[in-house]
Image (cartoon, rainbow over all chains, first blue to last red; front, top):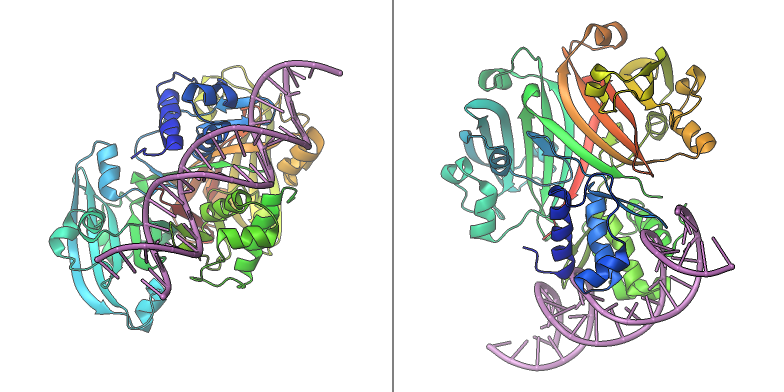
Length: 240
Length: 240
DNA sequence: TGGTATTTGTCCGTATGTATC
DNA sequence: GGATACATACGGACAAATACC
């Protein structure tokens, strides 16, 4: 993927940080030094550093230098500010995963569905309910709505694997922007039917609105997580 | 605050989006046009646009243009990827706020505290427990640990107002990086004693590790939220 | 279908300002 | 005060994707 010069530099610095070539709390070489090493201008180095700052790897200080503040990730963490599918999450954490489609229907948005999805009345949609298993443990129920004009020819079989892989490979559609909102809600009958709640009387509800590169919102998904099995993670830089 | 040119442009564009001068889904003027309007180079405009993309206001597409994808915020939302204090949160949502300090002690980190805080054994710390009220409703218990060598001369009175205002104004210390982790846990006796849980048997636990501009982690705080009162919000751009 | 203009993406080189040591 | 380091900004070049005729 790293086609551009600044992405090459980004990847190289990131590797060096993750491999502890540059250690936690250590200052990395100055921008001018790096520019000479990489054979580019200071601007290009700065671009790479900016990306690493945004992701919590580095911290810059005016007049002083650039410090490593990266520490190892925990497993089983959902990263906020990153887009990761359930399949990718499972693979990253070396877990078995399986998706059971318990509802698959085609609907047309009425006012009730508009209230849920923010899709205009009349929009043709797929409506799915899917139970997600990690190591045979049911941890999430997804309630998905997809626009049929964008996510075309969806089948139950695709929904059991990865809808996003299908979209990218077959339809040449990409998720570009995701807006997510998280609340905790009391459990519903459906939650209790499908999930292993381990005594909790609530679920973590993550509602996502997903846009493609034409700025069209083509998906609204509500993911209801069992409380015990997830961690959300976030890193922030305060700007002046 | 906007001292720099790109921050001026950032603020101006942000206002125009929020005031619907540029409407949802509309393309804004081209970078070259904006550069002429603002009397600067294209690079400076691009810098401002990049910030707005990162915050979910705009979406760019190569060869086409820049589209507005901002929609209004809901109230009572905690924005991930932003640093906001409890006091600022209350004021933004036009709510009364009050903080009650139920524990204030000075401790030295032993191995147990190191396990909780990741602070080295022997570090001198303040340990606080604070109950936070919104409109006289107890919604959060904070368990704070602060390094005494950095957050000096802390008092109960300061802790009842805003520790961060004190740090910035009196100590010239700033929060620069925050790493936060969120999980849901069963309630403890302390939660049940102080919080109004409305039937929930769990709380949302946000654990924060805060760094100053010297890269020193000077605070570890665990905030235990009542589930009903909070929404966490997040926006993401997927990069190529 | 093809050519041209427009628009964003990447990168360069330079200059100046400001914070730190 | 001088050297070093990051921050901002300018102006220009070319590439790549898109739109238009």
